[in-house]
Length: 247
Image 1 (cartoon, rainbow, N blue to C red):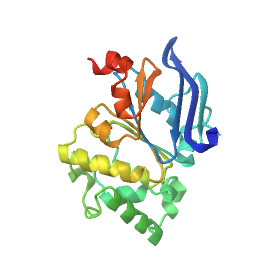
Image 2: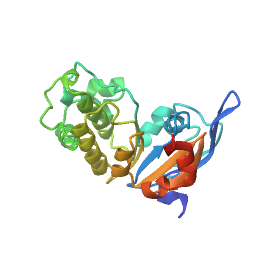
Image 3: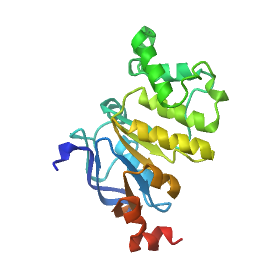
Image 4: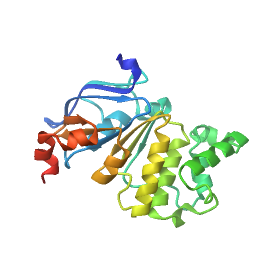
């Protein structure tokens, strides 16, 4: 496969903080419409990898290509425009706005000050809000103030705010932390739905959940990739058992 066939091609990526290689010559290819889960012990570099892809952290060396465009020197907001969405561990929703308003303000044309002033809620925006709300299971909660949602619903709303921008790569850091069993179920279903027209990268610790959602699992350790493949293959790998599953 040539690099153009992948949603994301990371090659020989390295980032050093004061001589410590947090990511060490890492190479990773994610297919279009793939749901990739990254696992590994704390300090393996998982969050740093997402920071490098979204532009929060600058790479020391190596290449990150998305839609065949080199990202390593590109500003964070330009990566968002190119179609990269990133959800951090703490939800950043507007608690005092309704679910509808949270989704509406996330629509791309509302991004700049001038855009916001000229911004009218057109039918297109309305339809998009409804479609996304249905997708995230909040279709009947559009008028609800976001602060009144459950923890899980807030997480889904934030995913919805990213979906409003129709990203082609969505990155989620521990999306089910603090969720109830039922919310985890619904989140698994949600992730399976949304990876049908985009690539999704998830960092997760919960192995049952990983098994349920992952097309492919990447195990990181000390800034490198230790193993990669199906959950069954990775779980049976002696290196992985030694480093991760054995503890």
